[in-house]
Image 1 (cartoon, rainbow, N blue to C red):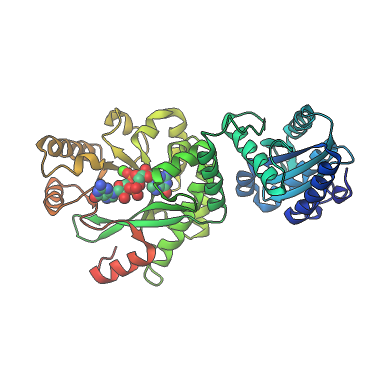
Image 2: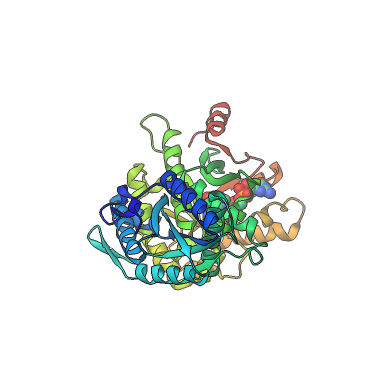
Length: 435
Ligand code: C2E
Ligand code: CA
Ligand code: CA
């Protein structure tokens, strides 16, 4: 293996970084061009680093990376070189190739070597590694373009479920914007560049502020603002949903702690959990940890789970919901009325609140049928001992109707639109709204 990587076996810190990698690649590209030879570039991405960091701490994650670097190093020829180019990403330069097939052989060897579990932080972890490959001169002639091609190939691998993909200019044209967006979203989550907006929830009995719902906002550098249901779907598809959820939960708990009156309890907040999170066994422990970090009283946290998510995999959902309920937090059934579930089944789940979907509430004033559905849901929920939130309240008539029906909470543009934390603070001050 090349001189710059001789120490890779010892520690992660000694691996060449992105800068050193670029200068080595530049040198090798010059050589390849002069000798009219092919060069291969592999990008090797560890997909479960975040989960390992969350579970075993950064030391565990570093141990895993160092173990992987050592294994990858053992697959290489003396002329090859290895560098760490991102927090969970290695790049490999394979100079002086005699055929394109060599890149696939190297990638395959690496994938095999990385497959076995690695001991770290007192446990064992099974690394999830994907590899993307690109060739000089076919897929790029500069350092940047070649690395970009290899990164797109790695993204294509994560999309296709294959452990290795070679860059293909034709095959990936359609998915290019999506892949780029995935990368952008991943970076945004990593650097915490998501913003949360908060929408007040009114207690119809007392007229006081009951709490807020947190709603994520993201502005992509290339596309501008992206709707939350869209980027949540991208996150679900690309394995980013757990980090995204934990980021939003942590931001929400921190900001609602900051918004509380001095030494008072935190502002109650509801956080949305996506269906994909509900099937994850670690969620209970991760939520418990976030609550400890931000010193959150369980009564001040509500987790909103959609009706269809609860129905998608009832057994797995039940396990996760029980673990969350055991923490003392409130579970709310979101978008109620849009699925086909029976309330009798939902009642067997550890839930405490039901949110009537805005599609029924919005039209209550003008549509007698919607109004009677809302009335029926409120009565039924009360019979099962559940509190009711009506979302999508857009006018005063609806607000008064809901209060008359005995609906406990209301949320909607008529009360306030979702807004950033600073605006919420001003809103609370100017309206005198207090929990
Ligand atoms: P949701 O959980 O049902 O959130 C309520 C949506 O209704 C929000 O849209 C909110 O802005 C909107 N809304 C509130 N009041 C009214 C009203 O009076 N009229 C109308 N027409 N709309 C109203 P938003 O913020 O665009 O979020 C859309 C969806 O994206 C959310 O639906 C939720 O499913 C998802 N989402 C948002 N933030 C997160 C998040 O942090 N995590 C997850 N997993 N999903 C999120
Ligand atoms: Ca919601
Ligand atoms: Ca909803």
